[in-house]
Image (cartoon, rainbow, N blue to C red):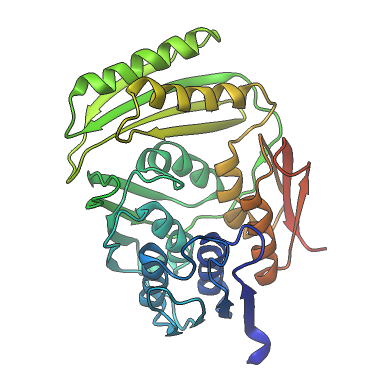
Length: 350
């Protein structure tokens, strides 16, 4: 029916790919037909790029959707989902585009498949450690834990890392049907339970990862923190370095990552991630700004009130709230000014 068609302007708010990904997820879950215009209108290269196109095609495949406009550079799509199906799927972004963003687009919809359908197994190829996207470590060591608290269960395994510009990474994922969904109340961070630093290199000397750890230790020690450290060599097509600082608190958590690039010293990579963590703990936030954004969609489906605090109310958070409310009868309150500490409260419309 026509009233079930949701029309979105992809140029509103932060004007990037998130509107597309959130809208696809919710179209799949609700069955509502979707039309998006002005896709990624605020980006230097607007329209669908490779990773966004693969999100559309993956959503189409798992729901047998009728789609128009699914082509590189397209600024408008129509997406009419049919029936969600669990199963074994293979998706490939033929660039270093982020597999994590593709995964997050279809994760919750596949978890809504009926329990008798069993789990879904995914093979995702492309970038696994990309700028402006959750890295594999973020997914596996941070995002996964909080989704489990809500009632969404998945496993991810890194077969091969994919760094810019070569890409070529490969992730295996298993998504199980959701359990009873639970709200989150994360308003007081509490004590620090663990602090890990994960440093890795691909096709580069292991000493670079060790230098990253050494510098991270120096920066965090000045603030009184004593993390545990690990070093690893990743299988990959190209070269790359990565570091993740993962903190777990009694009532929250955060993960900050940084990537190496040509001409960027290992010490600078380390300091970047460590300083983000230090800035976080200087606020009363319970979750990092990225998780604050990523929790909004799953918590909007719970049916009871969730609340958490974040170091920063970002444009992504504001835009995501607006997109979610076009599909669901949900109240999302953002308390705090843009780019400052704030609270996110999500509850059903009364």
